[in-house]
Length: 267
Image 1 (spheres, rainbow, N blue to C red):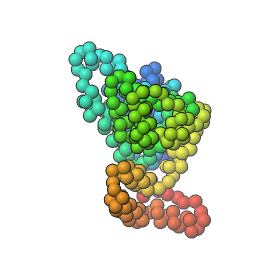
Image 2 (tube, rainbow, N blue to C red):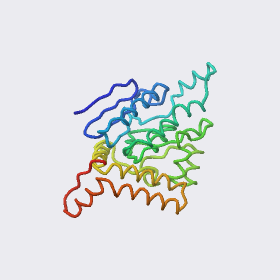
Image 3 (cartoon, rainbow, N blue to C red):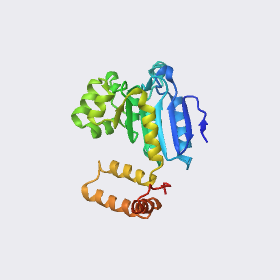
Image 4 (spheres, one colour):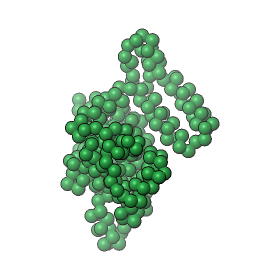
């Protein structure tokens, strides 16, 4: 049974263990407003609390994924003297990234068009990024005298290395999806018409897989950027000890021995 949860600026659909969260301001290329941030937080809370869900797809309506911050809202804040970018990051963008990273399920970005500024960083905050061939990524902060936020300053150099990250941030040139895949910025570039079928197939695979193992894999890979080798080996020991006692591990071994497909429950 499919469930469609109503919001003003995003759309949330849930069916068969998969949630599809769509940024839904197509007339503004799905750019962020305070209202959209509030809807995103509420939608992610629904996803977090729905124990039937085991994968999340994040995409955009219309011809863009997300053009970053809606500068019309910023212009009004400048005019009335209420602009506070530190508060915006603290109250909106930081919680959004942390909410995505802490979900107990894999998160796939389906980038269907331009992903600019915070929109590009939002895509990179997901676990796996698929992009349509016509899509592009741009670190547009440099054109405004700002720095990559929404985790961009952390994720960019880890994805593509210091030199490419610096070039992307300083020159703010768009990078086509195919080049983004070649650089390792994203997982795959696919033809436009194949984007959602490919992403939904991947989401179904993840939703049918050993969810706890996926989450610990994400946590281990993220931790590796700060840990020394011995600390990382200790983390691997602890996670393997936990996962070795899971139902999914026992099912995986039994299915391998019996030469049958495994039936994972995410436990």
